[in-house]
Length: 154
Image 1 (cartoon, helix red, strand yellow):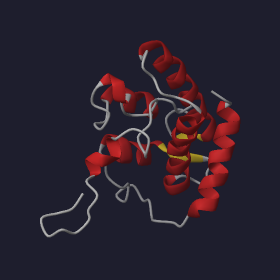
Image 2: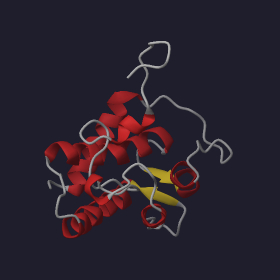
Image 3: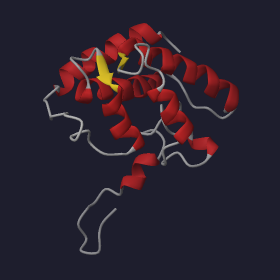
């Protein structure tokens, strides 16, 4: 895609196309076959924020893995056109790994107020005290591997 001057651009709506970044069983979006897979879903955001097992302070890697398992089971029941194989599972677990790697505490947990800013308010949690770190792909990759181990194969 190009802008009016012929310069190649990426339209963020293109991220909603299946198979690139978009995947079924997102933490906060509908599956492609279910309609609007670009807009956050209030109920799914609430499920994410409520997944904390420590009284609403943080969402741990285990909390995210447990939520991922519940989402997979629910979507397999609700979406008869689900596309969810090994590649989609890796992308889906990567969604959690990025959250933990970018906004979390050494990949172990993320503060609920940070997650609320990111997913409910769709902004960086700077007001809450987050500062940009440099997780790098190696650390996100290591977190991804741990999440996949906890979630298991689907």
